Amino acid sequence: MSSYVVDASVAIKWFLPQIYADNARLLLTNNHNLLVPDLIFPEVGNILWKEVRFGLATAQEAKAVITAFSALPLQVYASKPLISQTINIALQTQRSVYDCLYLSLALSEGCQMVTADKKFYNALKNTNFATNLLWIEDI
Image (tube, rainbow, N blue to C red; front, side, top):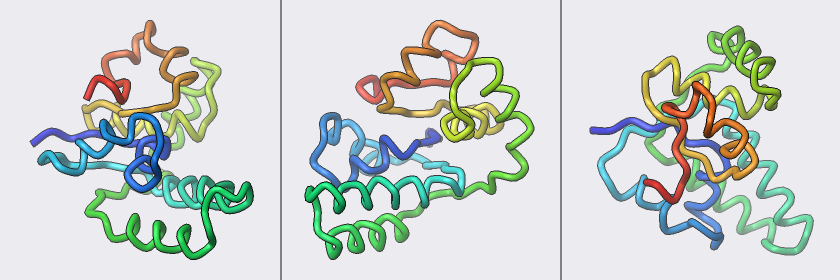
């Protein structure tokens, strides 16, 4: 069974009709362990808040997604034990601590982080972190 860290850019695609949604859903249909830092819950919530704010979803739809997302069998990891390594990665790569937290978890667990964040992926795809990074189309 493969393990992957998924970030919010991937997780939201399980519920919203976005580009690469079919790729993202492969993670749910194939037998994978899906690992996430606890930060993913407020990040997904914030994405849904923006969807409602811009009229792309209703409040009821956003609440339904949160309920469904919370029910998924995700392995949730606390951010606190990862923060020291995360800040080091962020300082080294000039990427946000939020994004680097997912990568830090992937490094700690010896697996790959799946992302649909093109800026993050492009910034790191030619670094020593590339082996722990997977673009969503490459699932």
